[in-house]
Length: 479
Ligand code: BGP
Picture 1 (cartoon, protein in one colour):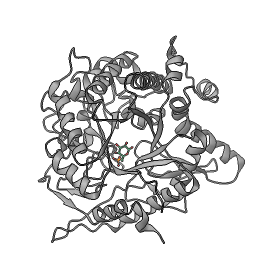
Picture 2: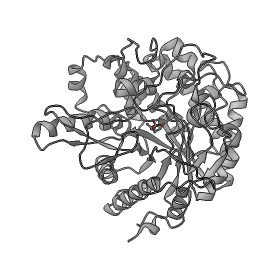
Picture 3: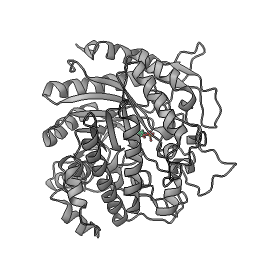
């Protein structure tokens, strides 16, 4: 394995799944604070009011808010050179449309970034990771409204100015392409008005999804341009949930359906954010799905002027697309596809496919030829703490090593890959299910689905495996 000399190794998190302290130091409620716990096959519910007898797992997260120094020290011990995290918009603007930012919220991230820098860790900051102040959901139904563009710009301008000397790498929207599907749109665009759980009758239409995405594209492009104009030291990235699709058979009809699925899921958003224009196939897609975009004067110019500097993706699994008979479906959180008989799945039904990561990186790089980063990849699994406190997780080590090998091959293929941040280097609340027992971490957190636990941190075997990989820049996997 020969990774580039300054390759970034690290881990990735999101504020709402990690921080806790949901109503501390002036923070306003965020949309995720209204999500209950769920499970495999049991979707999370959304409640309009916060009910005192219901457990909302994001309220406490894993208490990073009070334990960030210990956590970042553990990341440094593993050898991290990058830490991907997000800013909770409602810590900065508690209602989203407040007259002035919340100083205590700004000061918290000052401390976190300073702590990272003290350990030689470069922060990679997501501006919007599946959350917004709940007040904006009530007022505007999230990104359905154009009003969000200006509010998001103001929030970003505030944090850019404040952290200009502490943060260089930024991502605008986490997994923006999940907004192209109904389930993903609930998370990505916060269009939850009227959604009251699995039995809910609310349907988010393609028209709503694509209009909301248009607002996000304009917002993203405007803040990218702002960053480029005012802060030349910044590097701005997009972030897509990459689901590689294979044709289930070699029937050309399946191959065509796969190409169309790749266009929708993987290329539609990144074409806009990397190339600065809607792709050529968009018009036909909109027409066939009854989508009529409200595009205002200046929108397309904004999109053209705000293209990103690097491309980032999450990669967990691949899927198949088939048109013959009953095509068995896989599990996922925001996106689902068909089963592949050649692949094994995780305990939550996600298909494990390291070779697919090499394929994906080659495809993306061939299309855009800008630097790439894998900013999420990981395995959600059950872990057991032994009597002596050890946590043996060979399954996680195998997943990690196979995906690092695949990235090493992609680098050898010539792909300009500049970093890798494992999803959930410390156990945190699952986005899709709200569970704690779906653990991703190299660091175990003593916290359970019923809300109990001491929050004590413990190193798993995988902690040392990742430490070795980082120390040798991947070379320990040679041979
Ligand atoms: C991605 C999200 C993350 C994260 C991850 C794992 O889609 O960007 O926030 O949670 O998936 O998914 P889950 O938590 O549902 O297991």
